[in-house]
Length: 206
Image 1 (cartoon, helix red, strand yellow):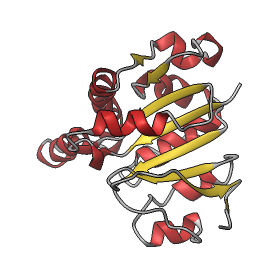
Image 2: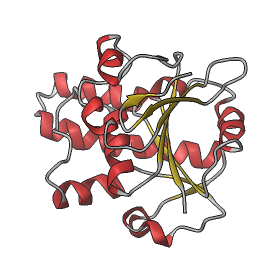
Image 3: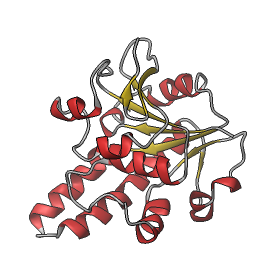
């Protein structure tokens, strides 16, 4: 049964019609299980401020930022609408009801998986929710990761080239290459369209 994780970029949370836009994209995703994975956005920016003001370590800030995305997950559950994954459901994909759309509070999965697997992303600011969503998609596992962004898809560019362009974080290519499929959608477009980008880390020709 196919599962798609849709990473909702933090830069999108100021869209007044974010809910309807997400619903339109979700209606075109060819997967039985659809899970919204929130980016940090302004919630993570607060943690960045605390990091400077209170002298927090990278480790402390890492977990606070992941906790902060839980608030964004709750927002998604209201405006889409959809259900929030419980801790048990986040850890056991077979427990999901196939007919529903879900939002993931990333802490529920990442904290436990981080302890269980040696390939977890490092706890540093250079790791963004793009990489965390990719790693979650690998470990869950999901057949597709869809990056919902504020910028167009880097068609024909490798993941490494996308890093150089500032479109994804430096750790993303190492995880994207392990995914069957990575797609992209500029959700700010007048007509948002899902564009195939990478298959097993290789650019999809168009």
